[in-house]
Image (cartoon, rainbow, N blue to C red; front, top):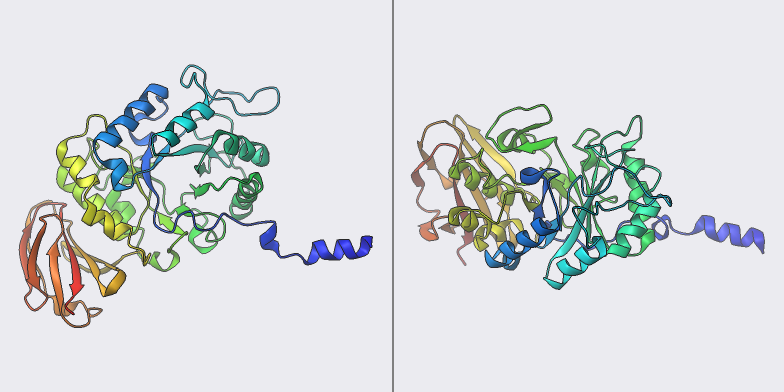
Length: 388
């Protein structure tokens, strides 16, 4: 009997023991993350003020549901039992109470840790504590975890992230698993069965094409997405990082372009601005239902760069019901007159109605070329729907 029992265990499907929770991210996750604006300067009052602003601005109604606490939410040391400890000065009510509050307000609770011995800011990492931490997150009601890649030494990335995946599954609470591995080990090639989304690059910065020590402008990150579209789809998304829409380093045109292109990419839409003080123009960008619909389209196709000609780039995204999203980007420092000859888009079959999504205007069909001026670092964004 003992021999039979051993054989049964050995022959059991691996999926019973090692898998992610399926179906949690059939469309790219949407939410807000603390890091881009606040870094480690976070606390309970900030989260509650952000929640109120996201409700009042229409962001919650638009689909932004995950509130993600990034690094520096905890104390510098684990407790005597090895548990992570929320900073009592920042979060005096504790994480279970915060999770309950977020759920009661209609949001989902996201949190951060790291696959190394320390987080990127030097706080306790998850290495060697994966199952203990997963049980703790589950007890707090966590719905989303961003898992970073600092202080990992010679660790193997696929195996390290599989360990945390298995720990989350064993804890029993469905949690979206976001791998923040920066693309160093090409996670798009191995992470489909590990997490629900994975970073493809280093960190984003609030600029067009600047390079900083650990981060780069959104246009440089956009360029690195070329060729990755085949790896993404429902429940497994390429993540070009959180958004800088509305942050001071971007012009309004650049914020509009940034948001448009992240939607074409079917990227997770994690806002990173201070939503409590954003302008009406930024609110209107972040909550535009027609543009968000490109990102959240149920077909789940990531868009791709179809053409690059001088100062013009054309990015396209296949949508449900035979429709297409088309984004024309002016990469020049000056405004430019641009033309789109629809016949050059070889994937189009037949005639389509053309809608300018930002202008909220139907502009005819693909029987006539588009000609118009596009501001510096700005876009025109179209939805093409087949003429029945």
